[in-house]
Image 1 (cartoon, rainbow, N blue to C red):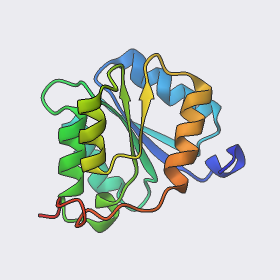
Image 2 (cartoon, rainbow, N blue to C red):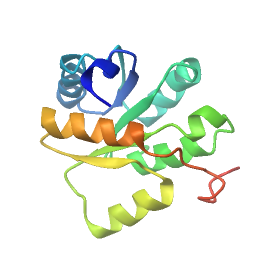
Image 3 (cartoon, rainbow, N blue to C red):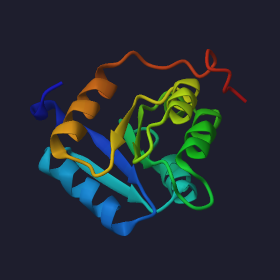
Amino acid sequence: MDRTEFRTLNIMVVDDELFIRNLVARMLRDLKVGEVHTANDGSDALCKLQELADKLDLVVCDLEMPGMDGFDFVKTLRQLGDERLACLPVLILTGHADQENVEMAVRLGIHGFVAKPVSLAVLEARLAKALSAPAIDPARLGLRP
């Protein structure tokens, strides 16, 4: 997937830190992503996702957020009962890509990590890779309600 194809994308950025949320949203706009939506935590994102389910192509979500962390958000997303949302590609923003987090990401069908501090080149590469990956099957992951 090249940058010209990014124009058709709708992506949501979920991060409790306003600076990071705005930074990643701006980077996505610099990559010419068609529409960028934001949410300030997992609960806010789940509410907005219900309205945007038909439109979203990918979520970029912080790992460490108060209340509902990134993994809890993805687990809930996979179990909502909405097939489109259950298969939605997710990239996790983190400064902690340790073995335990990587194993949890695999169990939840996460499409990759973007390390903080975020760079435009890495974000672009991770987006392209996540969007070209085969769709996940939440039933295979044991995450269906």
